[in-house]
Length: 596
Image 1 (cartoon, rainbow, N blue to C red):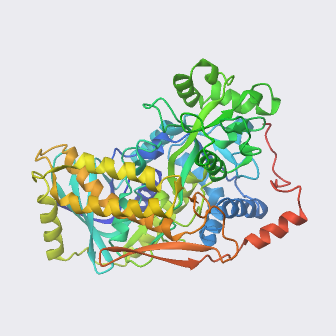
Image 2: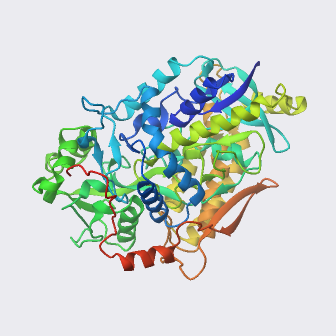
Image 3: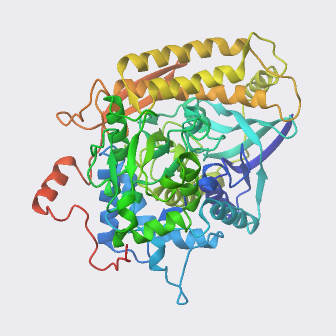
């Protein structure tokens, strides 16, 4: 067993984690950046390549529109204080991204070029900027930023087994180093969770990295934190339905359908008007409902017809980006799956939603501090409340930059006031002994089979479409898997023991899976990205509620509380639209909109 000490322990090596580590190190804190995968990999490296762009000196009107788009797009479940902070801070993220090594298209005068901005569904105007090198370019930029920063100890291929706690005070972590097979104990004054989401829990129907198994949600729950709206899983609407080896791969944003694309059921009936202007949740829900009604294709999807966009001059930009530009890789996947006709946009694509992003997550304040705990922060996808029932395209990287920096700043301020890190010796010893007992354990079950059973159950019982019966069955299955887990065999291989890694992941996946199913069971309405076939309408008769999850006596408990509609309410938005029926998609008067 090895031991390390630091001021700030950042758990997770994606965009939020790298941002937090860099800003913490620049504040003269000693920093350990720990990543289960390679740093800058995970979902950050495989993103499509856009982020919300906030021009310098972003006007109050632009900030208000961004706030409204987020709240309305999130179906009023968002924490509006967090959204307000996001809207106000967006203007600082572009230079932040570039100083860390990110690349954006600029002209000779240093201005963002107009052909780099696009309008994704749910946004009032083209405010999303394209990375010329997409996800790999982002990943390389993040690594460049780390290489330019002193004082960061990087630990890759290392997974946290559990956080060290003294009551609700977090004091470090017990970890497993995959490359060496050694156990590592890290003592830290402050811990920042940046572990990303849990899309791999829906494998194979996900576009997420294999490392995204929801670890941070479980670590926070076991430390006394609450999770909010875990039923709100974003299923990006345009995923491949076949062949089996490609099913579940995301190939496009809703905006690809603008302006002349059509979305139909198997009988050719349009299921959603103007799908290119709609949010991911609106488009995904339309597809899921059509299929649930029995109107899907033989492969279980609906049809995205883009033929009209080949000749419409307003769609020229998007068509070029998909057939010749930075999104060509996705079009090539369509060509591989469905043939040249679909790849040339002459034939429709068979599509069904696939797991993409967790809007729900750890309850935080405006500095990323985890409520209900001490010394613990969270930012990036693992944090909840910002996106409500739907994340607008392009908001993820921007959020990671904003809250990664804020969490680092506050964590460093707190660490400077603390004495050396201390942890309960008996707790350290018992946690280490528990982890040491796993390799070489005999048993009648295989870890990988239990893991696949959980993933299959998530998709079939707690996936895009849900019912009370299905969700109760899911919870029963999760209890059964939990009961069998201690009797699962684990290899005694010392280095790169992937069976041990699977066991550690499954242990953390179970409380997250239960949180999702229990929250979905508690929300007896269809709202945001959550569809209940037994409650198909949004409940506007009662106050809008968030669903909270907490662990008590090793059991998941659920409660609801009214959303604080401090800036925008459904009633206010309805009155606004009545007064301005032609302004559903407002455009700031002082912003020059690039050609479509």
